[in-house]
Image (tube, rainbow, N blue to C red):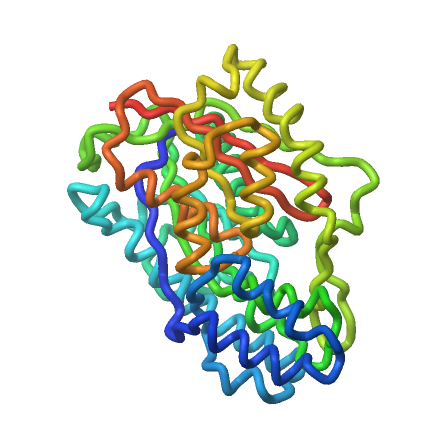
Amino acid sequence: MPTILSIAEAIPPYEIKQTQATEFARELFSGSFKEIGRLLKAFENGLIEKRYFVNPVGWFQENHSFEEKNNVYIESAVTLGREAIVKCLDNNQFLKKRIPYEDIDAIFYISTTGIATPSIEARIMNLLPFHLHTKRIPIWGLGCAGGAAGLARAFEYCMAFPKAKVLVLSVELCSITFQRNDLSKSNLIGTSLFADGVACALICGDSCDIGDFRLKTTYPSILAVQSALLPDSLDVMGWDIKNEGLFVRFSRDIPKIVHNWLKPVAEEFLHEHRLQIDKVDYFIAHPGGKKVLDAYVESLGIPASMTDVSLEVLKNFGNMSSATILYVLKQYMEMDIPRGSNGLCAALGPGFSSEMLLLRWFD
């Protein structure tokens, strides 16, 4: 059972209060919607208090070409991605000593908010002394489900190669996809919700010498993973790719879909491993938004308190697409969770799809 040994974030430089974002949206969208006051309640009702961006607010008041935005993506992704990796491998919250870059067998790079070839992890490998034979697995297009999917693919890699140490690096710079001239409701809601976030996780196979590095008493191991796709749901969320760049698309029915679809998917997954939802001690949920968290609670029949950590991340960071689940998981790893506790890690993304991991804490 591969173990998640360390997680670290790299926080973008500009903190934006939700009150600032609300006034920005009021100025931009008021000419397009007569009911702008009602629509702006989404900024308050979503319970987000602040977010972090790679550019200051003034940058969004000007038009930028797709090329310019993507150049910002590449530069910021390399800088923040490198920082997250450095912090992950030298993390005194979880590790007794630094893990050498040369020990990393593979890097899964997860993103949906920019394009780069060579991909970002290759650029970072030119800045840090990774082994020349470190495998690179860039994964693009999984959106909010990408962080959980990256952990799942790292689990499968470590099952095949038990001696492996693997990084999952998630970089999402949602803010640079903002379209100033898109005055749709989808863009308005996206403006209230999305943020920039970067995080890196270290997953180690069973035959690794983790006893030499582990600092805490218990760590989450990954027992099993599941991917699920809802047929005929391609229009639920994603990007419309146009000359100006990436235009956000998501359905107002997402909370309803979660409510109706998620429980049987989760029950099937847990049943395969002789568990029921009431035997899950911790629910590590990607906070797609306040309504999505509410739909998790209603669909699964779990106490609302089981989403408190996810809600706290949402309040302080917003929805950072794939990186968000790693922020949530890091908070759980900082707790002293008893041996044998079960965790269900879940994230939803375009497709429409879900990624789930069954975790158990061991010493």
